[in-house]
Structures are given as structure tokens and as C-alpha cells.
Image (cartoon, helix red, strand yellow):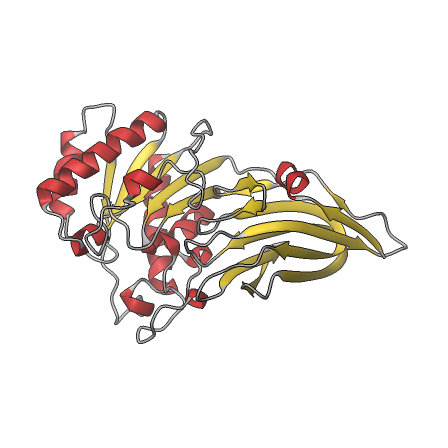
Length: 331
């Protein structure tokens, strides 16, 4: 066998970045839902090493070889993923599925090839899509509980953002997706009433763990906001939500001057529907205009409710289709 060990720096420079990732001293940091990397390789196998992951529950990742997804659990004692493949050229994509405050670092990639073949190698990175959609949100965007049962408590194994509405919408549009979301967070206050890290605070972070600033120079076609559900739980008044949402929209427009901005809302209730309709009208003639897209709430009868009353995969699929259709009409 022939082997090639790829350092984090080499991997970072030879990959297609999926979402917001960071090259850090400890490796490639993937700390947002559906963040990771995609590489083209020539090999008959790969070994991915990660730093120990310290949390109460494992973190789950997806490793896709030529689009075929396998899910693996990592923890403080399980830090390696072995990926067999037929010798040849392949696209390997690694994505974080379970969210959490604990950082996930990929520390190395080791490729192998048989003696009779060419040496293993990193090839030209996968191409970016012609469109890019950035999603800002909460647990709904994270895919919280979407693969679980309605009666189950939340488990990290029951969260798959690649099956959630945002990722599925981007797939329907043949677009790259960037998910920047944290469960329980709102625009003004979070679901428990706290104001520590609302969405208008963390939207500008490159890394959730390091809280480093994001570079907004990348071209973006659509910015989609899915927020308000946790403000309702946090007791935010209509007036507070109006002012907080307006300030956030103005900030988004300053950072994304050419993108179409859409507020997608309602899968878990429409508490601020009237506020968002009024705000859309208020900003309609300004540079900070946006499109408000209310959506029908998920229902148990339709099989659209997963764990902890969040959208199931079925609910996410329906939501993705409605959102993608609206964005397509706006292109």
C-alpha cells in the first residue's frame, strides 16, 4: 500500500469549504450545523482523524463518498473514521450534523492506494455552485429532532441538518448552502428569556466557538432568515420584535448589499406574522426591502412533527419545496 498524510493546512487549501469553517491550531474547526469540507481524491481508502470531542452526547458527522452518505459518531474516545472505497477518483465530503457548543476539529486525512496504482493524491477541489444561499436561524434550521419521534427527548443522533428545510431547499436550487444557526436563539431574546447570543449577534461570527469575525466578501444570492419562534417563548412583545427585526434587516443589508433577503417563518407558529407583514410594507420602498414568506405550521396528522415538536424530515421536505419555489420565482 501507498499512503499520503494530509495536514489540516494542506486539506484546508485543497478543499471546497462547506459552510463556515476555520483553520485553527488544533485542526479544521467545524462548529456550525452542516459545516465541513469536500475534497476530490485519488485513493482506495481514507482515514479521518479528529480531536477528542468533549460533551455529554456524541457528535455525529456525515461522510459522503460520491454522494453516498454514512453517519458516524465521535466522542472523547472515538476519534477516527475509516472510509473504504474502490481505487480511483472520488469526492469525499465531511459535514457536522449534531450542533453543540463543543468544537469539532479534523486533525488529519490519510489517503491510501494499492501498490499497483498511482500514489494517493488530493486532486483539484470540487467546484462551487453558481448560486449561494445563507440561512440564519435557530433549531429549525439546525434540523433539531428531525429524525426523531414525537415522544422522544432530544438526542444528538436525532439531528440532521442535511435533511432539514434549508439544506434541502439549496439542493432544489442547485445552490451551495451556508447554515449559521443555534437552537433556542431568537432575534431579541432566546427561548428562556436570555439575551446572551441572539441571532443578530452570532450572524457575524466565522466560528461559533472562537467568535471570530466572518468575511462577508463572498457573493451571496439569497439570505434567508428563519427566526421568531424563540422570541415567542422568551416573551418578546410585538414592539420589541419589530425593532429588533428591523435593526437586524438593516444590518444584513449593509453586509449583503446585493442579495435578496427573505424572512421565512411559520413552521412552528406565526406569533409575529402581523409584525413581519407590517415591517415588509414599511421597508418596501427602501434599500433594505425584504420579502416576507409565511408558511403553514407543521401538523401531527401529516407526519410533519419530529422530536420535541420540531419539524420531522417530512415537515422539512414540505417546507423546503415551498421555500425553493418562492426563491426560484425571485431569481
